[in-house]
Amino acid sequence: MPVSPGGTYYDNDELDSLFKAVGFIVVQWGQAEQSLDLAIAILYHELGGKACSKRLPKMLGPKLEFLNKCLSQIPALDPYRDEGATLVANFRKLSDRRHDIIHGAIASVSAKDGAFIFAKLDLKNDIHVVREFRFDAADFPALTKQLIDLGSQSTTFARRLWEVVPK
Image (tube, rainbow, N blue to C red; front, top):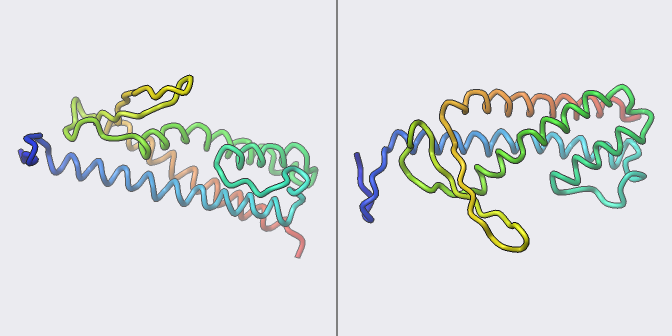
């Protein structure tokens, strides 16, 4: 097993698998959120969304709130209400996990019981606290499917909204 100059043991294959998994999460999330951005832009510029927000939302939370508001306030979107609500729920379901993995730091470069330990700084009452979590290889296939499904749902939703835009 290789050893770093600092004396830390690590497994190249384990690290390679971790880096591929994190890279997949980054790329797949980017695809899903870019399709969400397209849906938000269509709503805002073409389907009356300016009545729901003074500005085009840019961060994920405000985008999801904007989408919910549009779905509840714009009658032409009634046929898309359930689909949009599911999309919002799926983004919310996966966003914390994605955020932790992308913004956390590997606490150990060797897997322990099939999982890498990450550390994440969180703010609680304006004080940074460290929280550890596991990124388990056994959980990755389900996460992969969920992220691929989210990208597909997001792309389909944006396409369906585009079809409603008056030509």
